[in-house]
Image (cartoon, rainbow, N blue to C red; front, side, top):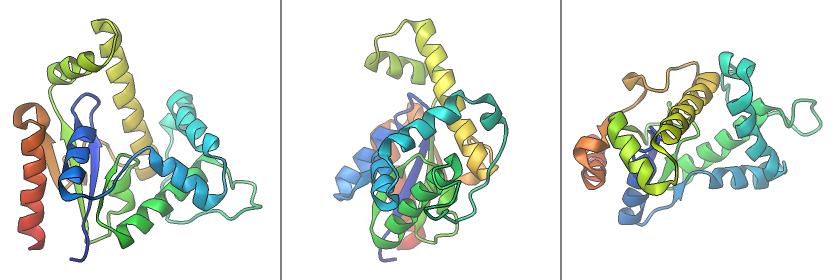
Length: 206
């Protein structure tokens, strides 16, 4: 296998992003997350601010959260009335994700990348989770909120991630069948999560 892409979905507070960054740093490879929005903007010609607003639109729109608009692998061309629609903004992010998967070894955090790349043989999809107590304790270390505020924020963030995933994939975000590996960072710790990803790749590809 010329290059391998690791996608990481994660509960808020579980440290999935940290695990991905640690893995990328150890291998000396890029790690992509929110910077995908800028890359999608540059490739599509659509203002980056619209990509940011697209995220907020799904977060705050009840109807959008309750419906699905499954990713079909297509982008809508300039001049079409839906060129800057939420669907097309997601499609352009997916185009960037697919280009990366075809060209380099990297880590991709979030953005339903596991689904976008589900038919790619060089992809390892990971879901990082932990107990509510672990997620809360870790989140409290990094944010100045009361416990009640943080619990509400974690629930809201995870619901958004779940809604985002369901809207574009039709799948349940926490369904283990969507992923190659599900890792409990609260029990393993971040370093051992990295080791588990490396061990899986060794067994599968070497």
